[in-house]
Image 1 (cartoon, one colour):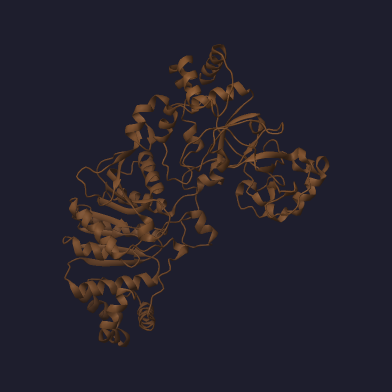
Image 2: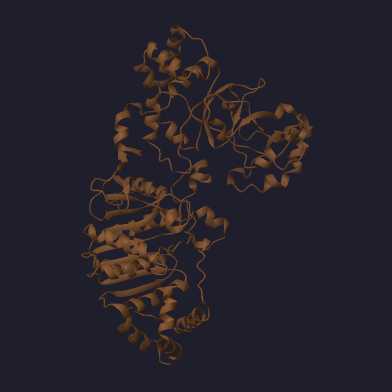
Length: 591
């Protein structure tokens, strides 16, 4: 199907010919087009007039427009029928704007729908970087004007939203501070890291956007969605000019959560926030979890957000509330309040598994004949001393760890250890590592810069403790897995896993029982957003003070829970004296 602007062109060929043959000065053309379209400065230069003519010819000479999203810009255009539903929803909820701003307007479907629905809009400001969208947008405005009258004057800016020129737009908006604003759109769904990999120019100026320190600034925590940057930049500019109105954007759920965090941190003046669940898969054919974020800006400051389905027909739709309570950010405030007594500091430090970013080289397995192979199915002959049983996240979805499927090469026992020693202590391993030197040098993470050859991270004394309780960071279903040594060696976990570590089996065993109590899982579920890429992170696990649970739990209750729920998984004899010793030590650790 041809885009509707092409239909319009085919149906109005005389108009098109006039555009192609116009010989008047730009000023005269713009005066004429202003009367016909309400667009101010339709062309900003002779070059743009020529560019538009070329674009018209290109549209008329092809039957179907290339509708492939522009990956470089995280580009997913919002269908017109859906933007219309959104504007109808806003109108039904007492939204009646006079000024409209769309910072990433693309073909302008939000603006078209808003002009159809909101009769009091006086001024429209649309922004996009791509020339093809500017001309599509303006053709769509021409078509709309041929169908209905509207009073709004329209400004279009072709510029990079990460440039200083974008902030200058808000200087033009300042004079409308008494008017009701609607700031609306669908920003790019891509991260700064993904754009960097594409060598994109469409990036914010390089900076430590979140003010992170040390390793956090070098690893995944410094990665952020471009939409997050755009939203915060928008709100800061709106707040600076003391503007007020509705802030409505289609956002990934993770971006909405970060926006609530930033609102708390920087007082962005958001209030009455709603996250209306939207089927991104159905609308955009992408596997992202997102919602229509709707909030007031410029008036009050509130730190909660109501989550409910979009366009729910029932009078009392199901909903939950997430956000800040008692200076803590949680995913479900109602549930959190029931288990808030577990909030605190973990008695033991949760550690992350080993990070090497080179699975095909570092993670090995045995074939049916007992031959050791790497991820490329190449035979490997190295000293067994440097091989350890290895569990991935997917191996932790059981109560007790089974025999590991993999072995992992451990080149260091502490961070920064000189790996040159391996040349003498493990000559076969040294040869193997050097055979793969190019692969090691190709690792992209900055944490490996200026570190010894073949360095790994997430390594320390804790890595080699015999007993562990592991949990996958990736899985939605929370499970605590008890891990014992295999073949007289401690088991190593991958870097998508987190674990507690112990010298004694009894301590690990008792902790494992505690962590399986329903109260623990209910508390953690009230903190995490299960649709996140990695719901159970270290910072979440460290908020769980499981020592508080044992204070409420008698030996009789503890033992009964074990017999009824876990004894079938792992049998172990223990006495009340063992329990009291563990309880006493845990209390000391908690203090």
